Image (cartoon, rainbow, N blue to C red):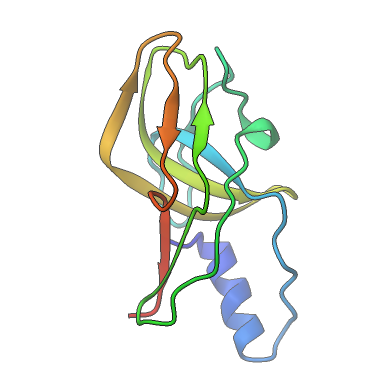
Length: 131
């Protein structure tokens, strides 16, 4: 789901109201309690191998499909080693400025023990528009 503020930016850009700058340094913030389009979720606090905020792992995306809905996905494995004991319920994608772009719940929450590695395979994190 798009962040409410970012959705407005895209809409304004599509209709010639303002120009949208290409987001850079996309980061996957690990979320323990999922928020909404207008409210951030609760990010995992820094601990073990995870650094919250601008230190969260990079989330590289490939080109989206041309089908409707158009779907983009991460194009490489994203891993965090030495995780703390926690349950991750969602991911938020933030750009470096920092501005939240998207949020979503995991299909299945991921529980880690202290020292585990949490990984998302290439293509496992998707984003869709249209439909």
